[in-house]
Image (cartoon, rainbow, N blue to C red; front, side, top):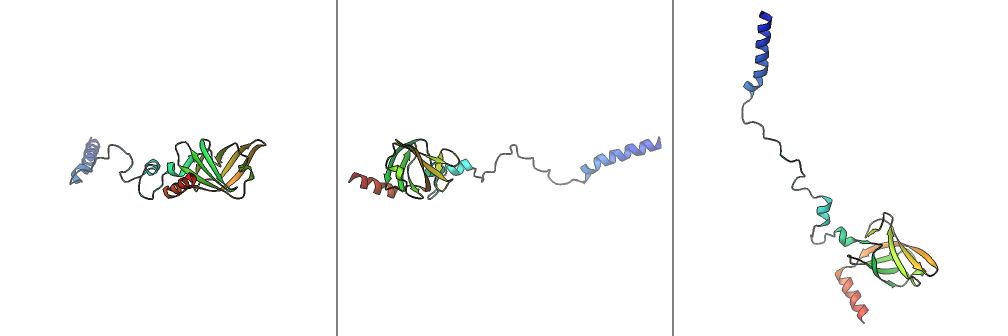
Length: 157
């Protein structure tokens, strides 16, 4: 009996000891949601940021299958416009003789239909009377407002 009462007293003391030893304010409650911190920018936030000099994905890319207009300059440069995008300058790595005979064109990226300035390698696909021809694109660049104005005024002459 004596062992049982000693055990019961030890148990009561062990359970209540932490409560007697704690002093000060209780710890703050954990946050109710574990969302992202307010100073964290996700990829989608970056893609829609309008800071000066900050180019968004929409400004730097176009859909290569939705080309609505094209204009060639020699056998190495083509200007293309895609639905919902600006005008892009495509420069071939070498002369592309099939440009003169092209009836239709599209642009393919190594990763799909989205072609981006400074992105994955791209290929110009030309449909001619003799069949499909391809030309490797060395550089993709979206025209600036100044370049676009100069191009428009040159076309009006």
